[in-house]
Length: 97
Image (tube, rainbow, N blue to C red; front, side):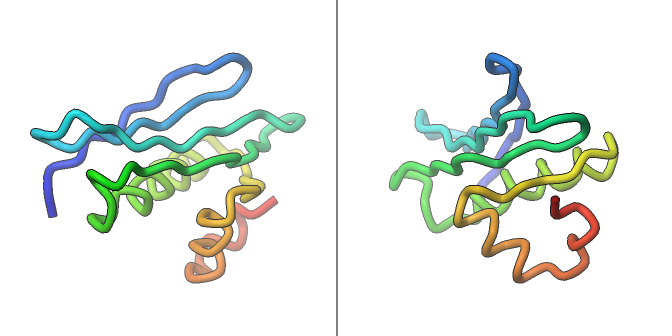
């Protein structure tokens, strides 16, 4: 698996997790918006074809989940990809809003 760096950036009232793959100019991202107190709605996960099939989208969701645990917020998986990962990871159930 290539080296992937995930960073988080404020974006309006919400935020964006950005995945940069070493040596490739294309980035993937996961956007979220706030919904009340301590709830974030995962709205979109986008990974360009140039970096697809390398686990980049899963790494973005992992970053969101890690922050949810560390910062005590829950997640509404509006994005279908995020919802599928929640279904595959029953250990994340307490983070599902």
